[in-house]
Image (cartoon, rainbow, N blue to C red; front, side, top):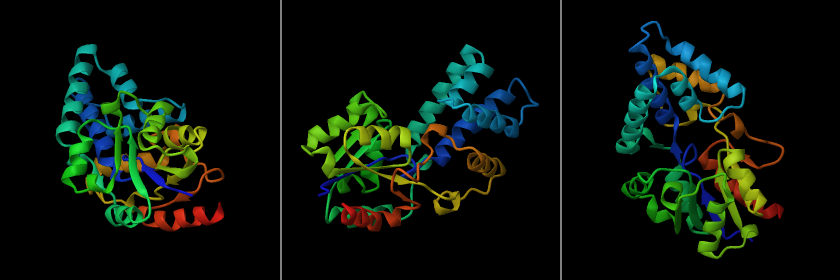
Amino acid sequence: MLKWIFFDIGNVLFNDDQQAFFGYLSLFEALRETNPQQTFSELMLAREAEAKRGQQWIISRLAKSRLTPERYSTWSQYVSNELRNRYDEFHLLNPHAIEMLQGLRAHYRLGIIANQTTACRPSLERRGLAECFDLIGISDELGCSKPDRQIFEWALNKVGCHPGESLMIGDRVDNDMLPASELGMQGLLVHWRSFEQKLWQPQDRLAREFLASCTNVPLFPHGLVDFDRYPCVNNLSEIPEKIAEMEQSV
């Protein structure tokens, strides 16, 4: 019997696309300071090439290889500060999130297991989402992050829940599904079929080029969905029905 449902934040409840675009846009602008011939298209092609090779932390790899150590430090600090100070702006709430959470809360206990900065918690509170959750586990507050099983174990121990009575809802196999399943938790993938399903619909040419690049090659190559192994939904409104199906099949 399912008792607890844990949610990821990025690309599940919140849309991460604008945050990622800001990082690449700011890198593009930094590169043009010393190379006016730099194009955004070339940067996206470089990102895609790194992703196809299975690299992690791609934007940092590209920045370190193209900026001097001093300029990299300045750029990195600027991006970190902007993302923290403008958290709400760069993390839009995905459609159907609130009604979905309110519906599930009537039947289950809800929690968060997410790799997020400390700016996430006050954002949840400002948007009235924090009250939907009985437990909020944020990596920067806990000092451990996914895919480390420690953060999942912390959550389960904190609420006194057996792994088999819990469900992890996330958008990545590597960070969410695999560590959760290793502990005996159930898993449900959120796989957005298109960017049009989300709230951020930019008209800016570079933003559209960024989204097209991510359609061509995902931002997180190790997080690709496994349709054969894990149940999957394509938007948040499908989650309650899918959970009901999973419960009936047990």
